[in-house]
Image (cartoon, rainbow, N blue to C red):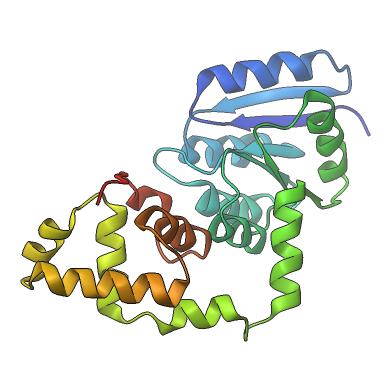
Length: 225
């Protein structure tokens, strides 16, 4: 079979360097290219046709989800192992649907990472425990789950308010942007908390992130009311 050729794609050079050093210790693994952004990763795959790509989600120019789709189109025999700091549901399912073979978090130990590379090279799915749990939960609960009902129950204005909250805006700022009173914003928030069964702005933001209602890029944080 020869060496397993690998491309590393992560916008943090120190992460790529650490993984490269780890893989260089294995005679049957060879890093043939590195990319610091999604577009470069796709171009490298197009030219080098590696057996495995280790890919981050949050990268400049082209995110991991879109890069995964393009890589699968350009090189169907290349298997993709996601290595991310995040296991939000919106990312997990989008990446698996796009064609990723495995999904690990960056706190994975070295031995597990190497084992996972061997597995995805053979086309065997690899999921870290938290991601596997999300997949099982989605399978078990189906489309009629209480969570889906909670998400669907939010009005368009409530989603708009929640997105502004995620962007770090205070109640008065939201009121000014929407041309409503601060009391109206507070009423919207009370309704959001009730429907999502949460008790704070932070919990509401985390819920929205996990269910894909807003993306990580929407969050500039605030935590203050």
